[in-house]
Amino acid sequence: MVCGEYPDIRVGRITSALRDNGIKHGVTTLRYPPQMDDVYDFIDWNHTDSQAGIIDRALSHEADVYHVHGELHQFWPVLALKERTDKPVILNIHDLNSARPATALDRYEEEAIAAADALVWVTDDYRLFGEAMGFAVDKPYAIVPNYVSSRWFIDKPVLPHIGGVCIH
Image 1 (cartoon, rainbow, N blue to C red):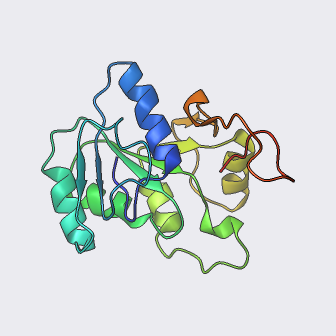
Image 2 (image 1 turned 180 degrees about the vertical axis):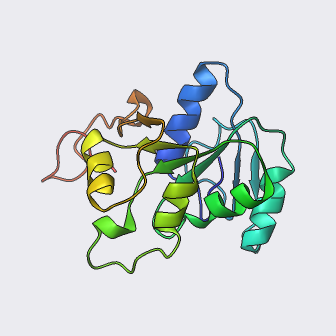
């Protein structure tokens, strides 16, 4: 997994699921994972690195596929990897900038979606939104919804007015 900023909980949960199925999965990123750091086969992080440095470090690890976690303004690794490797690059589209009207668009979003070999969407409706935006979504894809592992269930109300489970 390549993350421009840091691997959030979704990255950890996807990694955990892959690991449970015997697939080695590490992460190259700027910042250390704020949670679920025990699920990765390796964590390669350097908070002072450049974008080129992140890609150099990602390519230094043996990989069959590169998986980019595309969150707000983090689509650039797809294009950088596609320039430097012939291996498949999967883009996990967690957050489309274009779906946030008050957010500046990621200048790489549309190009990265077009360049990726396959896409991972949170819901099929989100994929359809991408299609309606004119993005090149006609390629192999998977729907991996957000979910909460029982590892993170809270047995008591978080606050007096919040009961149950809060989902990121």
